[in-house]
Length: 107
Length: 128
Image (cartoon, each protein chain N blue to C red):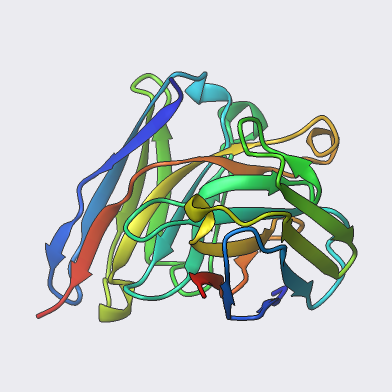
């Protein structure tokens, strides 16, 4: 199975900060990576697919980059609504696997 | 509006069975690849399994922890996805999400699907 490792596990930041979350795959997944946002008690929401494509309706402050084994999710200016947990997920190979999550907290 | 709504969760004893349902609306269900994803209390997301559309063979794949115990099926006439869970274990306790797969113009030629729609989830508790 492909292992997905996110860092950091927790991130403390302030409104307006630029935030970057890293996701590494244990083997190449090309660009077949998605990012999801999850708030407590809610279902995840798709933010980014194909590593860098912004899902319709998602604010442009979210961006994704990378290919192969290294990927990043960047929030250019953190907003109050962005405090949540973020997951990366590879869909290159079954079984699909998720990163362990990065919780973005208020500093 | 595109949506999927899960039902059927509840409390079951270890070794028992449960069937989850997922009612789909707002899209052509028969063309969709569908998956189940679960989340244990306080933990991350875990993919459970996937079923392709009938056009693509309606084949299934499962995660190792559930293979041989869980079965995904679909009834396109009812726009409904199912997850039959047998021989349940305490570690199967989780919120189970029904999800819809989608592919982009880049990924469709290679049959790489990602999740674009999630249900709100249904809770399964396995406990004596």
